[in-house]
Image (cartoon, rainbow, N blue to C red; front, side):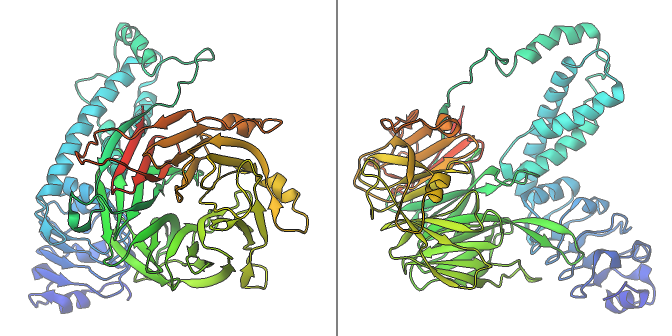
Amino acid sequence: MGPLTARLLMQRGRPKSDRLGKIRSLDLSRLNLLSEHLDPKLLSRLKQLQELDLSYNLLEALPPNLGLPHLRILRCANNQLGDVTALSQFPQLEELSLEGNPFLTVSDNLKVSFLLPKLRKVNGKDASSTCTQMENLNRELTNRVTAHWEKFMAALGPGKETKKAQADFVKSAVKDVCYGPDSLREFTQWRARLMSLKRPDDVPLNLPSTKRACNSPSAQMEGGPSGPDSSQPALQLEPLHFLQCHSRNNSPQDLKTQLWACAFEPAWEEGHSGATSQTVATCGGEAVCVIDCQTGIVLHKYKAPGEEFFSVAWTALTVVTQAGHKKRWNVLAAAGLRGLVRLLHVRAGFCCGVIRAHKKAIATLCFSPIHETHLFTASYDKRIILWDIGVPNRDYEFQASQLLTLDSTSIPLRLCPVAPCPDAYLLAGCEGGCCCWDVRLDQPQKRRVCEVEFVFSAGSQAPGRRVDGLAFVNEDVVASKGSGLGTICLWSWSQTWAGRGSQSPVAVVVLAQLQWSSTELAYFSLSTCPEKGVVLCGDEEGSVWIYDVEHILKQPPPQLAAPQAPVQILKWPQPLALGQPVTKTMVNTVVANSDLTYLTALTDSNIIAVWRRC
């Protein structure tokens, strides 16, 4: 479809007229229109237009000056819109349709409510609740921006230039003024920027120097001691939320649904690919939930009747639109009992692809840290398959292709791409031990057997013993765990790999051991927080074991010492905040986000616990 013409508008307009100025309703849906096809000079002649349908096109944005002063109904469903601020040119708008635009988020819904004060319906639903939420957020943000302004001006030096000070304040407000869940961060930053550009009128820019001098000490004291003499405080965590969102039929009496895995959503930080947000995905039973850790709000919930989900994994795709613009798109993969992988577009709220990966249950899955579309799935059929899920097409559907099949002699339980060379080797903790495969795609074989089997000394893990916990702590050190021996093993990948020779199995080079529960029970998954040098693991008593291994990473001990005790053991609070009489709770898995601000633990009794660093 090329640019619009007056003839086309008259053909598709109602009532029928030979004058554009008399058209009140116009249907421009399903014409493959691009944003540049919407000619403001032509459309501005529709002086009486009240209803416009632009659905099922390829629009990425609306031109800012369409000149439709009486527009009351606008349908823009199933396009590629990535921004809604241009809607402010339609102050009389009462009904709006935006569903099927996968790049719009919860923040955009709030922007719509702020920009369109007369809006009554959004996507066919009453807009009053979203409007109320926006008003509450806006009120709180106004108070916080005002307080931030006063603090900023109190600390301002007397020689600061006025224009430079305001520019610095805008940057400071956008960065530091926060409120609400992480999913609303875009909205809060947007409002903070607008508010800070219109600074509070009751606070003059040029404060007297005496007031600056008076308030400066308090501003410096806030945030605690600093400097070389200050010691870094020990890690302190407080219980924040206890959630029960995976219950069958939403029954509060369901304390039997097992919760198996969780993963924090990737954060959108330039140059920091490993950063994660405060939003976590959890799985168990027939549901996958996405939770904001700050507020405890379940942002999204996906159900698949008859399924039991065992694993979830995130990836951040770069999607190129029809106009050639790049968009970031977080996709969540979930899999379990039925051997299917479901690819979920969480923010848009729908499943956009299903991979029939295995005939038996999928135990775990993970994405490659280098290739955003490469997904490993490990199944009870004793196979690991590498998939390329590709990028979604115009209908936001995936077409996955199989790249490799890796055969195992036992069931793979945990997958871990080798940190220094994730595109070359894959580690897996299995029922029969720890194995490694060559996953380089430039090799001709598409079906491969285990290349190296690793064995552990009698002091840690005996040969052939189950490895049900596996994760890299940094680029070289691996944390692994088996059942029944009461330890977690830290070993060097580089030293072990260098000494492998041509034989298998290969004995790992153990650096240290961590004291853990002596339980014979299995499948307690460990995790790591590489940025903080921390290892985490749950146990059969409902406790979370936390280890600080940074000193081992910096300088491994010259000889193997006694197992290191955890720096902290989080005990499950009793009685539970949910008020449920749980006598014994096992923590199946525990995961922290990248900066260790939030920690999420999943149990065998259908309860999710969220801790926050104090």
